[in-house]
Image (cartoon, rainbow, N blue to C red; front, top):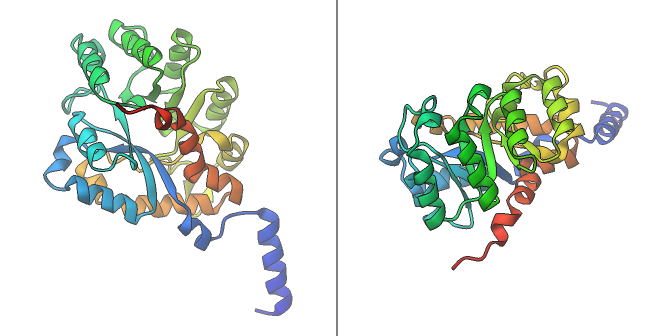
Amino acid sequence: MSMKILVSTLFLSMLCGTVSASSSKDLPIFDAHIHYSHDVWDAISPEEAIKRLKRLGVTRAMVSSTSDEGTQRLYKLAPQFVIPVLRPYRKRGTLDSWMFDETVIPYLKERLANYRYAAIGEFHVKAEHINTPVVSQLISLAKQHELLLHVHGDAKAVELIYKQYPGANILWAHAGFEHAERVEQMMSKYRNLWADLSFRRDAFGNGQFIGDWRNVLIKYAERFLLGIDTYSPQRWLQIKQVMQWQRELLNGLPAGVAKKIAYKNGELLIQGFAKQKVD
């Protein structure tokens, strides 16, 4: 490569302001979507789970589990690393039925009375179920305890939650699997809405952004986060590849935006939890 071409390349790189592959590799990662559920405990110890995440550059992780025992095991081991999140699930196979189970609310109340949490979730819910008694009471508990809601649902479900609780702080799992234009509409409408980008290979693939996703991430850079989403034992075996995809995504963004999405937004999102006094 001639010196003239090299200088031109460097100039264009500075002008675009994107993160280089090497600098993205060094960015700390706040992971907003980790699960450590009961079918993982025997295969991967709490110590090993945390080591695996740290080896990838994760410096903090929001963790929920089915049941909550997994979260508590990790939090007890690494309270500065783990941000505990409370799921309404006590066993597998209740994603589509928990909103009809009246015992969920006493369970949540008991856990909230005895343990620290930054959020309730990740919980799966459809728009048609937002106004059921169990879901409404869960939302009320989040309001009472000033907790973030980690919601796995489409845009309509999120809108209905805001109707019940206009001041809710919502972390939208997978950005609802909605297309970029719909996500932008939601971000514009709700200032207390954040979104994690786990499983969004439809937004970024083969080294490039798809559709209008890059513009949306830049426009609302303060409200997007990353997440591996270790929802199954198999997913724990794929975390290196998932992190590689996330860092490639960061490489395609301006440096300041990449830093916000990589870790700064997460730290701001949980600062209230971090300031809580521990008895």
